[in-house]
Image (cartoon, rainbow, N blue to C red):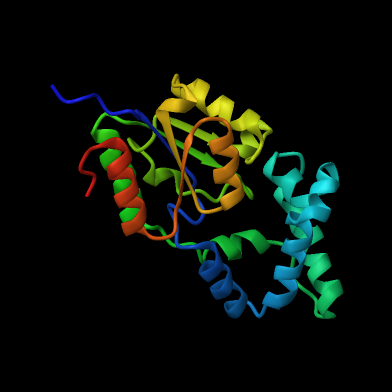
Amino acid sequence: MPDAPAYSGLIVDWGGVLTTDINSSVRRWAERHAIDLSAYADIMRTWLGPEGELEAMLNPIHALERGEIEVPHFEEVLAGELSRRTGTPVVAEGFLARMFDEFEHAHDMNALVRRARESGIRTALLSNSWGDFYPRDLWDGMFDVVVISGEVGMRKPDAEIFHLTLGLMDLPASACVFVDDLPHNITAAADLGLVGVRHVTYEETLTELETLFGIDLA
């Protein structure tokens, strides 16, 4: 009799995994709305880099992802910083909605998650949220568990949000595979005992998941 699969849970990110990659999506948004992409990238590096980590409680991105500030507040802060750096007024209202309009549904990855669940694997979405711009109507029957950072007051890569997700799945870390596009989130998951898979392309992720779960997911 063949051995039972070593893994029984699959946890996936949303932006950059179940959507088109973040860089290309943001680039399209910047071009369409005349946003200075260099200035935007500099702001993101500052807020997400070592300086931002030292002042996590004051970091607008961390606060937004934990649900500590609302989208309009974040939009005002970000648009204001862009305006200050470029000398060109940036409209704050609807800033994030316009950005997320450029994130396209990754049909192949979404179908892969569905096939995994249909094969008996427990599935979870674990996403750091920039507001509620999720296509929830497309998730029916796709996930056993959905964890959105702004709704639970935690964010990746904090250990607490992984523990919460595992508890809701009723699975130990050692039984779960985590797919994300950001290396620091993968490292955090691996430190807790999950197997991390960095998503770059559908084909690479499919191959890795088929090997780990020992089943055909194509």
